[in-house]
Amino acid sequence: MTHSFKIPNSNEGQTQLQSSADWQKVIKEYLDPPNPWNLTVGLFICGYLLAALSVWQWYQGSWPLPVLVGLAFLALHMEGTVIHDACHNAAHPNRWINQAMGHGAAILLGFSFPVFTRVHLQHHSHVNHPKNDPDHIVSTFGPVWLIAPRFFYHEYFFFERKLWRRYELMQWGIERSLFICIVIAGIQHSFMNVIYNLWFGPALMVGVTLGIFFDYLPHRPFLSRNKWKNARVYPSRIMNWLIMGQNYHLVHHLWPSIPWFEYKPAYEATKPLLDAKGSPQRIGIFESRNDSLNFIYDVLLGIRSHKKRRSKMRPLAKILPSNRLRKQWINLIHKTAVIPNPNQNN
Image (tube, rainbow, N blue to C red):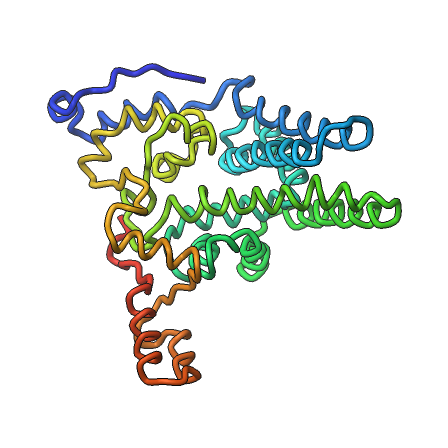
């Protein structure tokens, strides 16, 4: 599903598209369900084909290991977009096929589709909330390069909040049982080397990729809960294909049912509206000295407090050997604290 829409220039945007009703007409072009054969279906099929090719070449071919790992990484990277769109019912117009694609992508990724869906929808409901946004913890509780292991917090969040509905707990049990059975079979039949090299390793790499481009970069500096500013856009045709539209993440937050391949045209059609709302439209890393220092801090340490005076990190100052170091530590806590504005919810 692709649409063409005349993008108004700034003057036309002010005169022709002033009301919310006008903008609803613009964005409606992209809210329709995708066609039965669409790019997400292609990603799902290609992901499984590449995964099968990497395993086949492991046993039958002579391709070097880096090539096989690259194929496996690409397969899982594709399925990351599939499971994401499927949880928003944007992967396929047929509900059952959409669910099947979501579960299929989850199995290949080593995820659980019910966990991913319910936790991700909580993220959409509470963007940048220190306690209720599970992805906020993933992004702000350690260095960026260790972001992948923090995705295990999603499973804890799912059970701690009792997010499952109807048959989803059973679905979680089936998918987790399948995962365990594959690992046990790998141990019993001596193919754990395949699992390590072509599944766990690439999955870890994809976890870092998803963490950076789905969670960390789109939401930093993690301060606003205003729906027009709680995520960002950094336009790029190349990045649009490399990370499958996540550089237009704010568009996804505003209109979650738009499939990934429509983010870019939807952004271009609504850019005057986003400009008027003051939505962030840059990557936001090197725009100022403060941005750069915060990014370096996130790469090296990344643990951010949500309270300046009663921070759980503040008592660590007591173990430092000098008053100077203690003051520097407390100053660092203050400078890097993430305290979203509770009044910016609309």
